[in-house]
Amino acid sequence: MSKNEWDIIVIGGGLAGLIAAQQLAKAGREVLLIEKKTYPFHRVCGEYISNEVRGFLKQESLFPTDIEPAEITKFRLTSVDGQCAEMALDLGGFGISRYYLDEFLFQRAMSAGAESLLQTQVESVHFNSQENHFEVKVQDGGILYAKYVLGAFGKRSKIDKSLDRDFMKEKSPYIGVKYHVQIDYEPDVVALHNFEGGYCGINRIEDGKFNLCYLGSRVQLRAFGSIPEMEKQVLYKNPHLRKIFEEADFLFEKPEVINEINFSPKSPVENHILMLGDAAGLITPLCGNGMAIAIHSGKLAADAIIQNQNRLAIENVYAKAWAHHFSARLWVGRRVQWLFGSQAVSNFSVHLMRHSRFLANKIMENTHGTPII
Image (cartoon, rainbow, N blue to C red; front, side, top):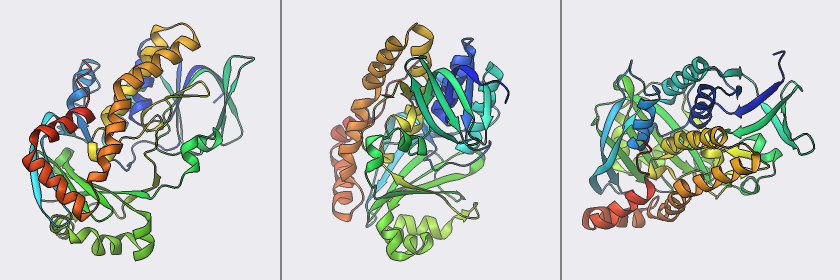
């Protein structure tokens, strides 16, 4: 790439980065999106999106119309020993794979006028206060310059390490594992099945497939030596999970896996970088809203840049908007996480859902947003 100066560089081509790039390019801004992979590709993700962002996606022609995402209306919870409770979702949502959705949004961003640099790893980002611009160093040693940088590089990145972010100093006990499967399962349900040390979600996506994704333990993986053996020794103790794993036709040669998933609080603005999606804060998977939060945060960051003229105003507006929409939801998510991942507390959770619908609805209300359009 001969050009090396940009108005805005977006680092990371997940949902948050793609939405921000599309919205900024649509507004006539000069945008470069940098992504370390090439579309399409799979990501470890629950692949369920709350309807809170559906109106926005449709208004912006960002809702896929050439496939039919699965319509999700019910939530099911099971305990480690198989006790079960079910309730209606207040807003509902839809299931769609990241493999499909990310490429779809990438094409929309490019059509809006954004440019891209794929298969490129960003090594570091430095804000030069004297020049009032960013210096973005990429893997080949080249340096790109931008007035603004948006950090949408996910849960954990070498950029986080280069920025010396606090959460990178902590070891996380969690791993994430994801499969796509074919199975005879209810198409309108998102289910969360507890096992000792974690929980596994399943919901339908496009083309009649199902996403099967779980949050597990690094300690258990080390103890049993392999993911298949850990699944047999730990996840199968929940009879619902055993049935799913034994009856499903697994579509991947091997699972998608991510390590060091950290739910510690993060800052939405660091070193003058606007952090988006998981880079700004990760909601616990049991709340099922990470994709919606990523989409919304991308819109908020783009709005802050489009509607304000100077760096300080942009940073303040974005930080306040992010806190208003997400900080309480992430806090509640961290607090209710203790209700999952062991036999005693998962039994209590199922009992709570069965017999205290008011409290269950309040938890749902406080971990879900309201429609943004």
